[in-house]
Length: 189
Image (cartoon, rainbow, N blue to C red; front, side, top):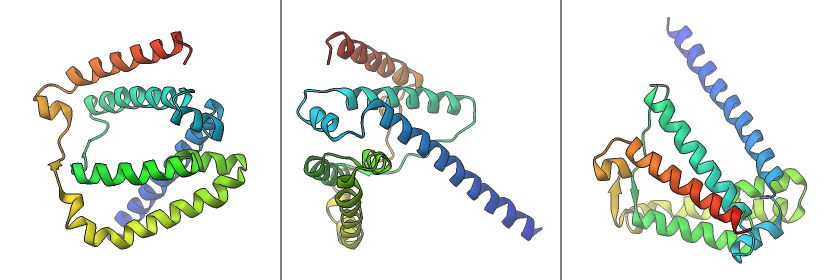
C-alpha cells in the first residue's frame, strides 16, 4: 500500500514537472515570437518608446487572471496566496529593477534570449541570475528577520480586502486591462 502511494506521488511530481516544462517552452516560444527576447525591444520599453513588453505582460495577466479564477470557480484549482509585505516588494522590486536596467533582460526574457543564442544573455544574464540568487540566499536569514517583515500584509488579496466575490474584482480589472491594451494599440505605442 505504501509503495503504491510513493509511486503515485512520484508520477504526480514527474507529471507536474513535465507540464511545467511544456508550458515553459510554449511561454518562451511566445516571448520570442512577440519580440520580448530582443534587447532593443526591452530597452525601448524601459525608455517608454516601445510598449511591446507591456502589451505581452498585460495580455498574460488578463488571460491568466480569468483562467485561474474560472478554474477555481469550477473547483479545478485551489489558490493559496503567499504571505507578503511591503519590505518583500521593495527588496524584490529593487533587485529585479537593477538587474533589468543593467542588462536589459528579466529572468523570463533571459531564458528566451539564451534560447535564441544571444551571448550577452547566456553569459552575463545567467551569471547575474546565479550571483543574485546566491547573494539573496546568503543574506536571507538576516533579511527575513528584519526588512522583509516590514509592512506585513499576510496573504491578503483584493477580493478579501474589499470583502467581495472574486469576480467583482476580476471582471472590472480585466475590462480595464483590455481597454488599456486597446488604447495602446490605437495610439500606436
